[in-house]
Image 1 (cartoon, rainbow, N blue to C red):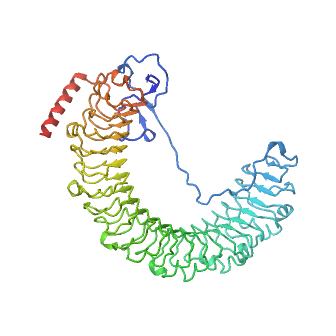
Image 2: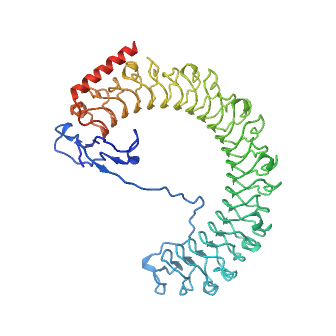
Image 3: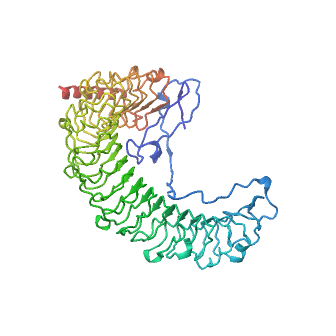
Length: 630
């Protein structure tokens, strides 16, 4: 490892030979590298950059994964952390017990249910063991038990007798998730408040499993094998106070009957729902969240009154179904409406008008065309501020956009032009994403954005722009134009943009001589400039003094002049990896005055080359650019 520190700052050096790595990949994604991070070591002096441009081989092998958290994982144990000062002497081996009746035997590789538990136990944790069977007589001794946590064991229905919990007249919380149960217990204490049977193999529930439990508030049954035949009609009879019901990831074709009227959260996603029976939700006036995504629902499988009685509903997720249009009769209090990943082709005039509280409308990944959206479809939706229409088939900007929209995502469509009045009524727009369409420079009207005085972020990446358009809003803070065919930045294209902080121009066709001198002059707030992946042979001149991070990776830069960064005293990061900079082409004094510099990345350049030859090549390329510009 080698490090070079200039006034306590850290720099990255190295030259890359033959490793399998794509250009522009972040450090965390790199494989075999020729240089790595260099530790901060205060050197007494830095005599020259040249002696530090040494080839260092090191290899990085990192293997990781992202664990998916269970959506409904809660504080499944009410157990307290035992205080070692209050442990009881009659505690089972390897367990911890407190005088308050808390016994924790979790994760100690138990094969059997412990038989020597204190009778005073009121909170028992046995999770993360290998228990296969429960003895009712042992449980019956624990008559004070309020919380029983048996999740993540090997319990089977055969090892869980029908009368196992019958004597636990004080039991409030029962956790049996992540076991091997195929049948739910026939009888559970009527004192239950919460029951978690998630991630088993349950195919059948009985009438008194959850019935006749007036205190029951939450039931978790997701990730099982429940079908309609396995549910009794009276599943919650006498349990009218259930507020949370999670039945996602089963095999249900119909919404269960006689749902508890107190429900405020109902999860039925990842089932096989084809139809919602008439009146299925009629008694759920307090329901606030309804999750129906990833099913087989069609418009024919519901009627105009399916959701109408859900007067408290605020969150409705119908994404990833087979809807061809937005369902009628949606309640007025919905705040967030998920309709993405369907086959919706049209938005009628009156289908949304009654949802007066709608704030988020997500319609991405459908089959919408501009002519299929009625010009008055969004009329009256005064609270609607976020609209997602990306990954559709829009050939132009739809008419009648919501007047108060603040975030509009129309990326990945087939839009080819932006007309003068496309955004004439969206005065409050703050974020506009038009990336990855088919927009060309001549087809952006120079007054198209004139009304967007509050716009802070504009993304036009991945289009067919060949020059920087005129008429950008003056209050823009973020402008993304990467992955176009931009070859020129005309004079005054960025004039007046004094609030712009981030400008992304990577992966275009920019050359030094095609950037008009003074192009950055008025960008007095610019902090990030990304021009990686272009055809630059030198550092652009007249960079703004506010600049903090400059990305010039994957260009054709051969030399860095001594005064290249004179105008950027505040710069913190300079990224020059994968250019053609040779040993001797950079002087130490180039960076000596940059007091705020923290990262200098010149990895992937060429260590051994003829500097004079490089200089000649650079001059030839400059001459070629000048000829092309004429």
